[in-house]
Image (cartoon, rainbow, N blue to C red):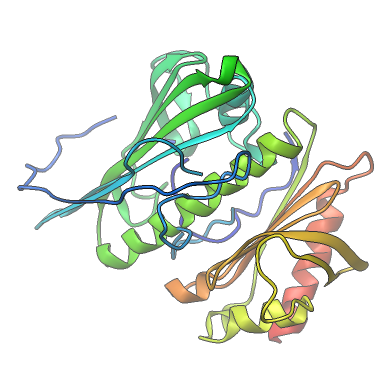
Length: 318
């Protein structure tokens, strides 16, 4: 997962990011760690007590034991950062490995890895570690492929739990931010938590199922401060509806009989019997709002879904 800090990537369809020019000398690091709290099994919800994590680029898009941490260190060439999360999800390590490498369209967006060390990774990156189903690493150093970063790297460690029925995941994303580094860091951290929550939902309810992915983002007007509040109200969600509430959301083509699986001022997650709908309040990070739909139904139509939600956004903010 690299570049998980923005609105949709515009790709649709059925369905897999971070080598190294000389790195700037690292200054002394300042680290902040947070002690996790309790989490209900299978939900993939961050247990740090912090609000779910995200960003301000242009892409759409659970913690358990351990101490998630966040590290930042600034220098003239940019700001080095590291985001660490630990979580447990339903399913065996082999099932989670598949979700992280070939099944990303089910909870993030479609990506592909060449299955070997030194192989191609998403966003023009290189696979730095390929040890299924235990350890995955990737690295990207192209700022044109990961805007706002001169370096992005990913390190994932998987271990079985509960006799292999569940899997512990240690997620580490690091690199160097350029430009408005603090804003990008906040966005990346918030998106990370929401994406990992979505991974937990996928593993609990839709593991391994074929999926049609659609991703869209709103017009420039959806960058307004109240844009995400307007989106929630257009969906017909009561202001006081929180995680676990069953709702009938207003969507293109009719109502969604859904459960709110995630809600904060930055993100909304709706789960139906056949879909995960993800709504991204990227207006908080200076970008248009975004929507991704992961449709596991037998008659899913990725392009039709994309066009319908794009029209919905254009009318909402037009």
